[in-house]
Image 1 (cartoon, chains in turn cyan, orange):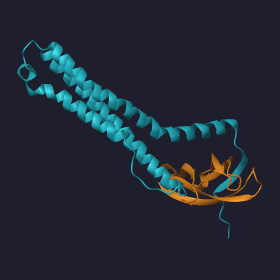
Image 2 (cartoon, chains in turn purple, red; image 1 turned 90 degrees about the vertical axis):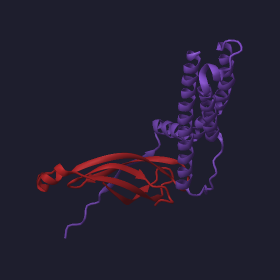
Image 3 (cartoon, helix red, strand yellow; image 1 turned 90 degrees about the horizontal axis):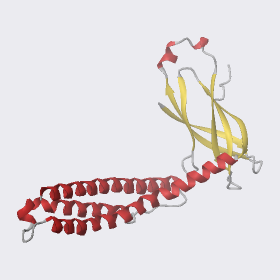
Image 4 (cartoon, chains in turn purple, green; image 1 turned 30 degrees about the vertical axis):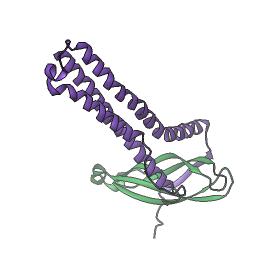
Amino acid sequence: MRPEPRSVVVESVEPLSPHGKAMLGAGERLLLESVQTGRDFCKSMVGVAFAAIPSYVGLLKLFLPDGLSPVKAAGYSWLLPVVLFLLSAAVFIGGHLPGRAAFSLDLPAEVERVLRQATSRRFWCGILGFVLLSSGIAASLAVLAKL
Amino acid sequence: MSDDSEKITIKCPLCSVEHEYRLSVKRSHVLYHMLSAPSSEEKRFKSFKRTFLCPSKEKPFQAVLRFEETFGTIIDRVDVLAKDQA
């Protein structure tokens, strides 16, 4: 009977090359910073979303003719940008808050799963918050253009 | 696509002791290979450079692994499994 050929053969073994070391270091940094980058983005965007509300109200006041209420000038649609800014701020806060997860450091697969969840949550919070903020800016421009 | 796990033993370049590792090998079954005659096929090999961790020194080293692609299959991906996955 012919012996079953080995499907894997170790061709060469060597200490990590300088390129490999640099790649490993870059991967490590990327892995550690992936959560922090999303968190920092959400943190700074919370301030932007909240600051957009008084800016919008200030501009509205500037554009409104004297003695006219915003409801009379633009209907209740003038509130839409405020709601969108608030929703966007809420989503960014959701992305900034620390997650609740218990994991063992002895199990790298579990750490990887938690890390992937945290990165994914912050990424989607960032995207959703940014879409809401952009919609709020577009809505506020539409309201101001109507005046 | 199939996902097999294979065991290899590597003589560590850092501590000169043999360590055992598990690999996850993803293979695809290819139709055009299935249609050709097995005898006319030349042996095909694919090499992958992967990083391994020496358990005694806790430092990484690299090894080039050569896989033989059997008739009707190609190797898509090779991953070194972590100890708790092995």
